[in-house]
Amino acid sequence: MNKFVLILVTLAVTFSMGAERYKDRLFEVSKEKNVVYASGVLHLKKLNSISTALLMYSMLGKGTSVYLYDNETDLTSVSLHMDIYKPKDDTETKRAAVLVMHGGAFAAGAKDDTDQQTITYCDSLAARGFVAVAVEYRLGITATIENKVLTIDSLDFSRTVYRGIQDVRAAVRYVRMNADKLGVDPGRIYLIGNSAGAILSLENIYMDKESEIPAAAKREPDLGGLDAYGVQGANSQANAVAALWGAVHDINIIEDVDKPVLLVHGKADSTVLFKTGRPLGNIAGVLENLMPASLAMVGATAFKVQTPTLYGSFVIDSVLTEKNVDHETYFVDDMPHEFYDEGDYDVKVREKVFDFLYAQTQKPAGPERIVVALAKPSLLKMGEDNHSFYLTGGNERQYAVTDLRGRIVKSGMVSAGESVDLMDLERGVYVLRVKGERPLRFGLAK
Image 1: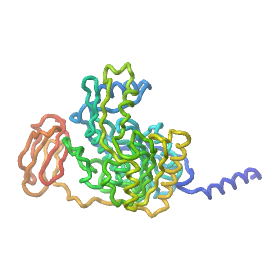
Image 2: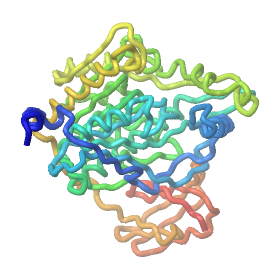
Image 3: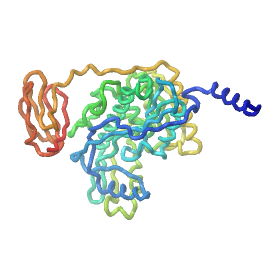
Image 4: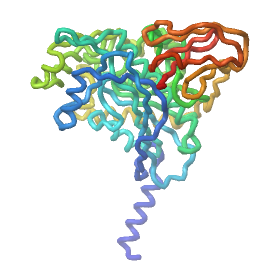
């Protein structure tokens, strides 16, 4: 070995000895795309004319896909996916994991979105030794069009947010339940959320009771409990959150939850307000800009968007400070929404996030798998292809089957072991309620 090569080898060894997992780039990155983390998830089906036009326009590379739906009666069953980034040739089997949630006003965006740096974050984290996961969650808001005016109601918007909350919880459970397979420490699962994704991330660690579910989610068709979809048997909440320009729907859900949080926000944010207010006040203008003039004839020429009040990072910081909960903030004067697009703030924000996550890895791991054993097992079972239902035990009970408009289409009494035939119902989606059991949504295809 000549002297020059020896010097290079020595420098390489010295550098590698000084490098540290979770802090420095150490690995090449592998990527596994479209891993299913939840299946049989009900979602909106019938796109309205604006979304249909925009989807066609985006296929030509001339626009953005925006998901707006006509109603909540037409539903379909979907699978939810995640892209998993891992450090190549890494022998560690108990790695910290970071789930990344994109933004997009709950009506746009994707897990492989480059504009919002989702891929950048995932690739950089995996190179540092994390297992990084880009999460797909259900997009789409019910919107009505009348006299060329598109209207989004605040209750419909709340329901869209709640669907995303369910999905993120299912994604966290999936990673925990597959921790051994993924080489993940189930006690070190963190979230990064951008805008809408930040809202979902904060709701993940603060909304932990069925009583905290927004009332809008419980109206017909009932969207179900927090953990209605996906694998069961594990804690659905992350161990820490980095929230970029996020908010929560209710400050009362921020209890003495000692989960580390980093709040990043521009004080001049008019999309997700830094303090308190209705978010996306500028979404009507965004939609108008997205809708090409040549396509306006098939949709709307005016937009009326009503969103629920949210409490931004300033309020969350105030509540956490009052409760003496340790947390970090990075608030910047005069900065708008997603200000990592401003100057060199993309680097500054990323450094804040990476330093925060690195600090979490130096702490003792949080709770691992927590099997949900508080709720008694359901006695309600569906027959093959949902053609019938029965109870496996208990006393005689009242039951009712309603359609998605809340109308009772079948009712009566059912005893343990008795099979109730459902083949007299029309094809569609229904909700089955049996006294003493949780409501069960099912589809009947005939």
